[in-house]
Picture 1: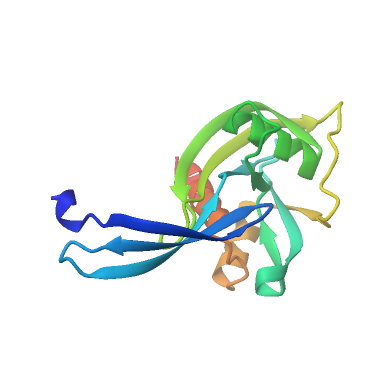
Picture 2: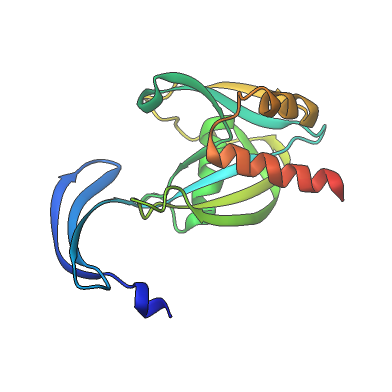
Length: 183
């Protein structure tokens, strides 16, 4: 059945190769024989962390995001790159860099495509608990200005109800945290 929907790649032309993404235009043959163009964004992958303190608060980052020209509330996250041995190492590094915390307990919650209609970016979402301050601080990214916020589940629920949570990975983490409340 999947073969019925399959698009065959005819050609692919690189349009941009940057620090974070690579963009191409694909020419594909549709199942009915017609041709179509697809813009594709390639990304190395990313991680996100639902970091919960011992007093049951989530760590959020408040930061400016240029693409939406607004301040956002997000869970700690970052891209996978050559500094790390694997995706889990990336999660530990990002937690250190962005929150100055380390976790005694880690659990992979989910993996998902962030915008499957045009990008191959895949994000792994982790739960981090047993948080303690790091003893060896890794350098933070020079171009990031982050304020850390610690919120209870009820405070997060209010942010959700009032439309102040609009980042997909953060919403996914919130809904997972909600399932934890129900247990």
